[in-house]
Amino acid sequence: MAAFVTTRKVLFQHCDPAGIVFYPRYFEMINSVVEEWFEDVLGHSFASLHMDQKKGVPTAGISVDFRAPSRLGEVLTFTLTPGPLGRSRIPCRIEAHGGEQLRLEGALTLVYVDGVTLKSETLPAALAARIEQP
Amino acid sequence: MAAFVTTRKVLFQHCDPAGIVFYPRYFEMINSVVEEWFEDVLGHSFASLHMDQKKGVPTAGISVDFRAPSRLGEVLTFTLTPGPLGRSRIPCRIEAHGGEQLRLEGALTLVYVDGVTLKSETLPAALAARIEQP
Amino acid sequence: MAAFVTTRKVLFQHCDPAGIVFYPRYFEMINSVVEEWFEDVLGHSFASLHMDQKKGVPTAGISVDFRAPSRLGEVLTFTLTPGPLGRSRIPCRIEAHGGEQLRLEGALTLVYVDGVTLKSETLPAALAARIEQP
Amino acid sequence: MAAFVTTRKVLFQHCDPAGIVFYPRYFEMINSVVEEWFEDVLGHSFASLHMDQKKGVPTAGISVDFRAPSRLGEVLTFTLTPGPLGRSRIPCRIEAHGGEQLRLEGALTLVYVDGVTLKSETLPAALAARIEQP
Image (cartoon, each protein chain N blue to C red):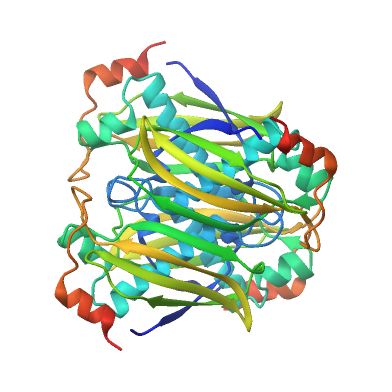
C-alpha cells in the first residue's frame, strides 16, 4: 500500500493566541488530506462519493500525539499510510512533519457507510483495490 | 478526583453535508469543555492563565472513538474525568452522550507549559490540589 | 418587532495570534444567535426547519463593521433586531457589545428557501407573525 | 492597482447540512486570500508581519452579498482588488466565481495596526507602493 504525501500551510486561521496551531485545526487539515487522497489517488472525490453515490467515509476513531508545536507560515508535510483493510474499515497511519521535525503522529480509521442510514457497508472491490495498490 | 459534566448543543456550524457532527467540531467542543472546567471548577480561566500568568495547557495527545453520530439540535452531555497527575501532565477521560447513547469516548492529556517557551513546567500545587479534590 | 438579546463568551477557539477574536468566528457567533432566535423565540428550531420541514434560511448578505477588538474570556451581548419583512426576506440589524463598548454593528438578510432547490419561498404567515410580534 | 486572483476548492469542512458552503467559511477563505496576497504579491507574509514586525492587518469591516450557493468539490476563483489607500486603510473589492457564475461579491477594509496596541499606523511607504503597483 502506498503512502500519500501532501502539504498544508499553517494559516492565520489555524493559530491560537499562543501563536501555534490550535489542535482542532489539525483535524480539519487531516480530514482535507483524506479528502485529497480520495480524489487524487483513489478516484473517488468526496463530491461524487457523497452527492452521486450517496456513500460516506466518516472517521470512526482517531488518535493523535502532538510532538511539537507548529507556527504560522510553516509548511507541514502530511503522510497518510493505509493499513490492512477490514470489511468496511480503512485504517491509516498519519504523520506530519515541519522540516525534519515530527509534529504529530497517530492513527485513524475510516468506515465506508451508506450516506443515508450511516450503516457500514462492504468496501467496493474497485475502491479496495485502489487503496491496496503499491 | 471529580468528574466535570456539562452540555453542548449541536449547532448548524457543527454539522456536515451528512447532517451529522463533523468530527473536528467535536474537538472544538472538547476544548471548550476543558476551558469551562478550568474556569468554573479549577479557578483558572483561560484568560487569566494565558494573558496574566503567561501559561498554557495545550493538548499533548488525544484519542477518541466515535460510537454513534450526533445530529443537529441534539444536546450532548460531556463528562471529563481527570486521572492521576504527572509532574506537568493532566490525563483525562472524555465521554459524550446523547440521551442514553454513548457518542464518543476517549482520553486526552493536557500539559502545563510556559506560555512563551511552550516548555512543560511542574503543575502549581494549588492547581494540582484543585484538580485532585474529590 | 422585538429585539432578541443573548450572550456569547469569547473562547480560546475564537481567538487569533493577536489574542483577539478572529473575525470569521464572529460570523459563527452571529449564525448561532440567529439559530437561537429561531428556536427560542420563533418556535422553529433549525433541526425541525431543515430536517422535518426541508426548508432553510440562508444568509443572502451580511455587512459588519468591527468597532473594537474582543478578547479571550469576555462575554459579548448580541442584539438582533428584525426589520420590515419582504416576501421571503428577513432583514436584521446586528450589534455586539462588550460591557458598554460597541464591538460590531451591521446588518444581514436571511432568505426563506426550499431546502432542496434553495429557491426562495413566501414566508409562512405563522412564521412572519412570530417575527413581527412586538 | 492590480487585482489578485487565486482559487479555493470547496472542501467537506466548508459545507453545511444543506450541502453548500456555510457562509462563515467563506470569510475564512477570504482571509486566506488576503494572507496569500500579502505573502506572494506584497512581500509581507503574515508570519513576518505578525511575528517579526509585530504588526497586523485586521479587517475593520466587511460586506458580502452571496449571489448563488457553492457546492462540495467546486473550485472557486477569488478576485481581490485594492482601491485607493487611506493613511492606514486598505480598501478592497472581493468577488468569487464558480465557473462563470458569480457566487459572492463585496468589499472589505484592512487596517494596518501595531500588533500590541492594535492602534492604526500609517502604512509603510514600501508596502503602500507594492499595493499600488499596476
